Image (cartoon, rainbow, N blue to C red):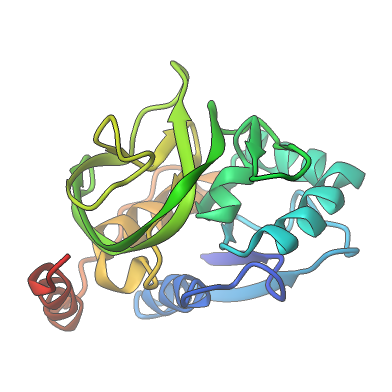
Length: 238
C-alpha cells in the first residue's frame, strides 16, 4: 500500500509545529510497512485532485490567510473539493480550519470566503484563547495547544471533534472543539496535534487508505512514547 500526504500551503500555513502532523502521519504509516511520502503544495502551484490521499492544512496569521484564500479562489479550492469528493481526507488546523468553513471575518478587514467543506463560520473576537486544551470525543481524549482569537460556530451539517474539559475550544461558549464534516476534520489544536494523539492519527491514515484500497485494518503499534507525551500534556496547567 501507498499513502501520499499533501501539505497544503507549507510555506505559509505552518505555525506552532503543524508540520509535525505530516511527519507523524508518514512515520506511523512507514512503521506498518506502508510506503508513504509527502507533497508540499504552495500558493501558485496547482493541486492535483487525484495525487494525495490525505491533506494537512495548517495555521497561519491573517496576512497569510488572505494570500491563501486568494489562491483557493483561483482554482485550488475547487480542486481540493474534487479531491474530497473522490475520497481524500483533510486535517485542517486553526487558520486552515477557518478557511474550510463558509467564511472568516477578521477585525477591520475584508471577509474571507471559505470553501464550505465544513459547515461552520468564524468571526474574530476581542480576546485570544491561549493555553492547553483537553477534549473528549469519538477518538478518545485529545490534547493540544490553542492560540486563536477566532470564534467558530458549527452548523447542523458538522459535528464537533469533541467537547472541551480544559480550554476554550471553538468559541469559549458552547463547549465544542473542532469539527468533523464527512471526510474533513478541523481543529484549533496545535502542538503539533497528532504525535500526542495516536488514535486520531491512525483513524486519519485508515480513512485515507480507503480511497484506493477499501476498508483497511491497521496493525497496532507500540505507543508508549506517544502516551508519555499525552500524559505530560494532560499534566500541564491551563
